[in-house]
Length: 376
Image (cartoon, rainbow, N blue to C red; front, side, top):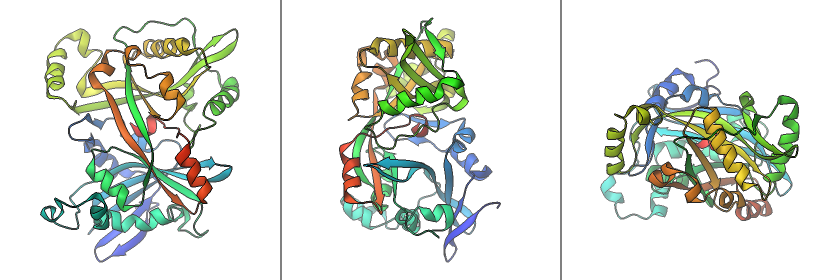
């Protein structure tokens, strides 16, 4: 397989890494159900583009006799905290194709989480070297152990992901909330405009300042496809955001009565045009900017973007410690679908590699910048 490297081998088990997703992974991810049992569960329909998004991407595969058993993706981006530059690696698309437990279920029923972490899965055991030195992904670790963080968004109710993060040494540094913004009949904003390419550096400066006290900030995707919208007042930008179109195929809304209601509502043409569970179109809002005191302009912008893009639903994700979360998380202003779907809550978990204690503490004390597009 082109550009594929074997990192580890044990009998008929191998761990391979490559910098492109490949047809096998794409086909697998199209069938993978994301989310947690008892909550919203869905499949991606546009996974190929997402797997190839901007950044330094690597995909690891655990194989047994050549057959893929599990996979995990890493997206590398530069980061800085407490004045120290280092690598950051976002865990993406962790997926187990077949059960790979190291002990029988009955022997673990009364086991604590710490005990379960000691009894590692095959996948967790085999990729531990990567979590000790992610530079192995890039160059085989020829430059030694570079300062870095590996991080992921982990749902508390998803025990498989929680156990995996325990096994690989990730620790909780904060909490993230994901929530919907919807308008069934979005109003047009005549003040809405796309940020022209020749003004993007100016906008980047505003957004960078807005997230100055956040860790893990990255502007890689903010101006991708030139879809950054703004509203100006007196010639200056007072609100801005980036849109990424996303399409899900809903497997379960996480509530039996919502599932039944959805089946009834999709029979109504005016509803199915807006909200089709088999092809739920939404926008991921990222890189949000709002000048203090102009929150009304931000809500106008979000609604106007839905109208411009012919959508009715958007998703946002933020660290709950961020002052920006409190800025735009008023339930009464988020629309009817927020009241129906509620919020998605998860942990921000990080493993620190070769970083001094004061940098670790900085991560503990500051909110993280969360990319909605990267994590939906």
